[in-house]
Image (cartoon, rainbow, N blue to C red):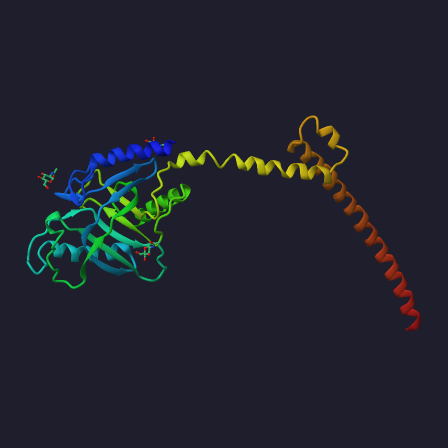
Length: 302
Ligand SMILES: *[C@@H]1O[C@H](CO)[C@@H](O)[C@H](O)[C@H]1NC(C)=O
Ligand SMILES: *[C@@H]1O[C@H](CO)[C@@H](O)[C@H](O)[C@H]1NC(C)=O
Ligand SMILES: *[C@@H]1O[C@H](CO)[C@@H](O)[C@H](O)[C@H]1NC(C)=O
């Protein structure tokens, strides 16, 4: 019921926002004339779900051991393209966000492939000028839903991995399915902006988006756990102390009464009986019998 309500609320928000393609009416779109437009599907405690309409981007790949190095290299190429490195020599405005596609499983000591993309402004969506650098290409982003986690500060590779991990943990808790082969690191601000910086991590939704607060789920698991701990107790009673059973039944078959009976009966009886019976008997019998028997038999024959 609560989920249906949030979905309905989300739908009314969706209608209110509307629109597709680049736009600038977003609270974290502060520096550039145009930003990527989206429809909010739902906003949960720990993440939100957004719908993006198809858009065209200019992209380039960078193979690097460290994401920062690869991203810097790719960023420079893309920046050259929008500032005139294209066959028409035109200036293409900077937009937000900048997308970095990051493979999920990067092997240690092997370079990973990072893909950086700039959103083409609405004027250039249909027929963008051809890049002079052949390492650049256009990407048509499909119609898609994404799971989003937002965070502030500078988008360092360490923090972006951290937030990606946190988002996947939350998505697993609510049993949301997403493409787990890659995620997007999403940057909205230039390095010159110092305050209220906004970054995001995206995972692309598979199947239907899941709109459930993690807090709703965490209240359910504790109930089956007490049951499983209770069942082994009756099984222990018959095997251990048959004399205590009738006395226990009226009160309750509980742990505190079993544990005290276990420790005194087993440990105290074994430890005292072992040490006196074995050691004292062996040592006295060995020394007199062997020495006495050997020495007399040896001397006569020699
Ligand atoms: C948003 O974009 C429109 C044109 O696309 C422009 O007129 C307007 O000034 C922009 N608003 C801001 C806050 O940049
Ligand atoms: C989930 O969390 C959001 C944000 O805190 C809240 O507005 C919403 O009411 C919650 N939904 C449910 C179903 O608990
Ligand atoms: C996940 O993404 C990868 C890389 O883009 C793609 O090859 C794969 O088909 C996707 N998986 C699913 C289940 O869509």
